Length: 123
Image (cartoon, rainbow, N blue to C red; front, side, top):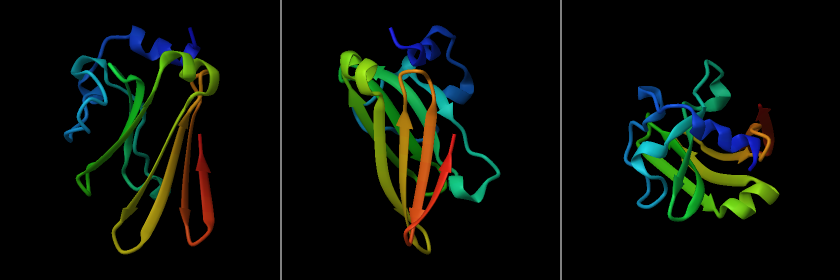
């Protein structure tokens, strides 16, 4: 079993529960665990990333509470063990921002934002 899935071994806390409705089927209510929280860094844009499990497999769900948006992606447990899981989405306020989050089997979470070709990468 990938080390990243150890996140589901701890009890769910209040912070682990998304504040927005998530896409249907992308996470059982009691399975959500926060894996990337907003930071004071403007590059984060206030989004929160959760790990979850569902009938679809292992999932990541990204919510942007300020904008009221949620996006999700799932893979089978076997695929997660081999390659991890990636989610990309676009949000727009005054400009269009493309985001990519990658959750590795070792538990590492990468976050990347692009705007006009510029890239900000976070771990």
